[in-house]
Image (cartoon, rainbow, N blue to C red; front, side):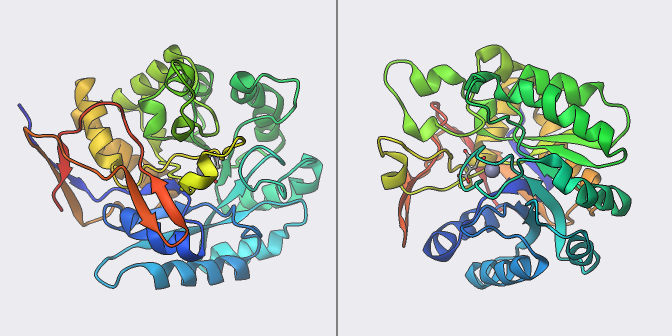
Length: 348
Ligand code: DOR
Ligand code: ZN
């Protein structure tokens, strides 16, 4: 039985750190395990310009404990007013590693997102030219589309036409949740399309949210789908397909905000993600594929070096205990409960 696993230090290719007291409270939970993370720009107001991203990076670095090493990889929030020159400059300076597309109204703090794609064509063309990836929240927002179908419909109606209008654009489909998205990524042979998958979407399906009582701490967007979709995600990652990599979408909200009659979308997985993933990959007989998913496939797509530092996980016979919630200056934040005991512990 394998009970020790050493891999290059993982990165998180989709992370929400927020700002202020919440940032202070959560950043160490990521920095403790991950060398780098792609930082989502959906603050209020959003991180739109290179100057916004530089200031946000400074606030993040100021919140990282001195004993830890962590590199935030910044992103810009695409709006219909985004300027191609500003984006190009932010990339050229090394500050920004991707631009994030939120369809307007798709999720938390996405009011400033894109409604009319004609208005971002010029920016997307420039991004294709300079090789800057577009990270896509892939859900349509139309009220007449069932929430469980929004990802699949987005691929047909928005993503595929967009990729045809901007040949060469490098695209990361973020937090994919369906067999449809897996198939779409796998059908691509051009090398310009990849997808992130969260820890929680490998573990929960929609029953976890809704059966036997409503569980707000499992509510996120895109919402978890049917079991067959979860299994399609598991197959893709456990097969070692290098177009898929880890983006936790760890998205802290206070318990007070999660437990409202209209609660926020987001699951906080930063503290126990690596323990959960080791469990999942081992369960599917694919522990060897964890290294690609968490440490190698992301850097390859983003054309960045694999981390030279390492992480060692060990399997112990007693469950590894994680707190039910963490305390932050903004309020308590519940930690993702995978629903089973975890035995893989991050040693270093
Ligand atoms: O569940 C989610 N939470 N999905 C998103 O797309 C946004 C995120 C957040 O910012 O809370
Ligand atoms: Zn997200």
